[in-house]
Image (tube, rainbow over all chains, first blue to last red; front, side):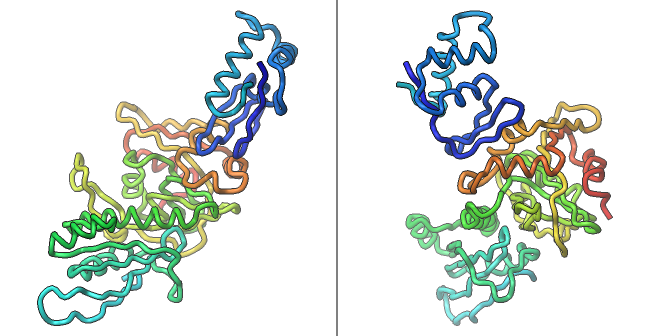
Length: 85
Length: 286
């Protein structure tokens, strides 16, 4: 699985978190979601993305990093923020 | 008498269509024409002149958009107008209420991409022009707040606050839509001066931006909660019009919020209790 961030109307970052405007909808992004979007500006394999997230945030407390990354990407895809292939 | 209107004398005889010049009002800083036809059109234009008393356009203003309506004593004329998509009502009060909404929407559409438009009431201090905008969805306290705290201050708007990049606010002192009874779905349009309100006579500049949170269960003085920039954006964006059409909309909105020292959520029960809060932001009512 791989993923790529989709363009948004605008974005504001503060303290590692962000708010984006997708069409007419505003979406608040956690630090993790912000890092995922930044980590897949171009097509990126989910394993590479998970490795980068672990390096930035540490090992997840439950579940494995890949599964958590896939879950987060699915949520971001549903909000129109990433393309998954 | 505020807005421009002129009437061609009526032709004698029953039910001759009236040919009236459009009424032009200033809405969100833009001249908007209201063209009314039908044998009772004069009743509408006469009331428009009273209701829109504080929204007088420049004398040589050319309307950028037109709202069309039909008001006629013959129900079949109104029915035909409605079928063809024209704005019409059987009751004058009902038509005037919907006309206010249509004028606002027409002006909002005409300003798309041109300026930040917040669904917010706004009052200003006449001594300084410092203004506070009170963001809230429809039916949640904006007009009540203006009625309560507006006398002695400048009434800027009870509906849509237009803010330019330099924080200048474009006044829109429209008629106020007041519920006929507390539970009524219907509203009557009311001229601002009838409620003791006065329009701005100088420059208005935004000094405070808050989210109104009227809560019937709230006890004690108003609670003022500062919001971080991102939380403020999430709360404000749904209360904007045509935001995506602006260039860098979120960044401009964030810059506005931060230039004001942040946005606050104000939880309160009765709008009169907000007087001290508003005084602190823009100065006391004169």
